[in-house]
Image (cartoon, rainbow, N blue to C red; front, side, top):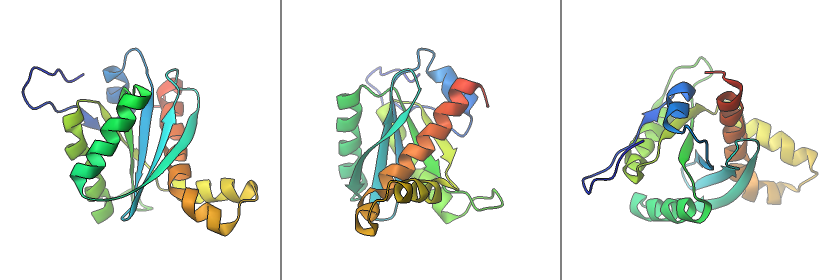
Length: 166
């Protein structure tokens, strides 16, 4: 884990669940982010990495304001690591949205927490199906989809972390 010695702190940013896991030997609560152009969906998991739950959907602003909100969520929930959805193309290649997520992760690395970039290709459609199965209205789904997608991203990541699918 990154050490704070008064100098600028940066943490590991990786797409490898194995490397991320090595940074968190004691597990701990995780924060997931589903980065949209206008909103950021959040989700959290318990310290034992059993289940992910949707959090708040945050209106996206300038990075400094977003970072302050993330810091508050991290303190509030004693978060030990961050999982950010990585929007890959269907063939697994990366496009402009992936590069944007990588840049956001690099910027957040100054918080000193390890960051895992996790494939989010099916997260929104999976979240939408789940909300429809709950018989949620279209209007209500629109307000909750980003955080539900963040929970899908996080559940996939913690399943891999616990199950050893690195």
